Length: 273
Ligand code: SF4
Image (cartoon, rainbow, N blue to C red; front, side, top):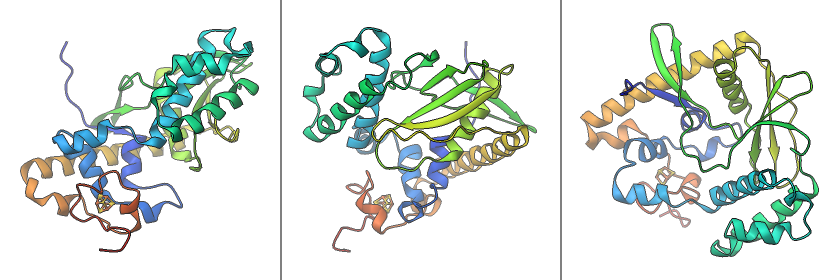
């Protein structure tokens, strides 16, 4: 069955419009242009296809958690990390990735936060796009995409949405609210809370809850983002030569960490050239 195309919104898209607090200096709207408008160009596609180190670590850490809960005995095996190293084919990863992922798995085995939890959903992390959620905001419809890592049931049947993190990035509450908005549509009869757990340092955020007014405000914001993005994409399709006026570059320190710095004509190198 053919689905009607609709504009979409997600945390990832919001992040490309507005960075989390403290990371404003790294923001550059042109990255959204490369990621969304030029993703099919071979050079851009190659960059997008090659997971960067941080993404690889996050993905393998999540896969490790998933594997721990696929086999209930694995958590108790003394050779669990060796087993996981083989399952995840860690020997094919770079030294940096191996050196970060193995301690994460070891830490998880010692402190398996999902053990004894009623797991409702646990993703491997490489399932691809989640199912879209159709949202009607006034007379505007859009698809919401929310890739939820894990849901478990609390004692009182509240759904607890858990997002796994790695690295030093601070938790961004907007992401939790988007999960709670998604839960409102997927599990309309159930109460939900959300939290973040950093698999690397063991930091677990406070549970985050949202009133219906908060979720409504987030829904309105996401509808606006979907609309703005749809408008920019249309502008670009009609005027590809105006790429850098539609998706404004912000050259500077952001270029140092930008995955597109090898193909971006606005990139500023370390030496400022
Ligand atoms: S290289 Fe710099 S200017 Fe170009 S997209 Fe990346 S951050 Fe923006």
